[in-house]
Length: 122
Image 1 (cartoon, rainbow, N blue to C red):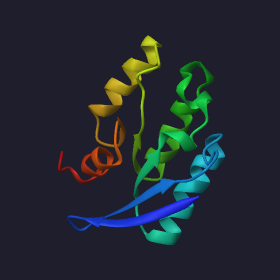
Image 2: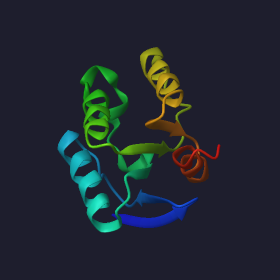
Image 3: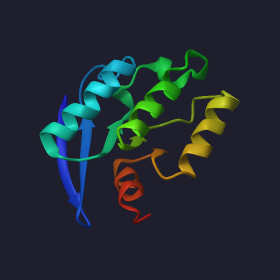
Image 4: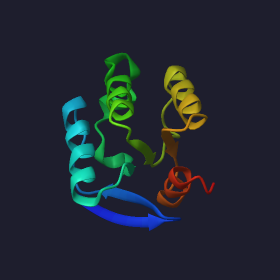
């Protein structure tokens, strides 16, 4: 796992990427958030979609909702970047739409967009 620490407009942001699965369930997502907070002090995290298991994107598993709730409980804001074009699920598209209109959880195409969403400079 790679954690890159950025400071944009005075806001600490951690960018998480790597080879292989980093988020495979709710506990691994929480572990990631706590590791990032401990190592960087950042409460805003940019995550490469490729390090998240596909079950996250199947809403019927409940994983996305559980992870979102954990992040909100611990006051962690997250932007996930990657390609979502191959997903056809209407509930997932609705979830992404609603998340992108909130303040805490975003789905965007690029790392740069993710940083902008978390700093409010979009």
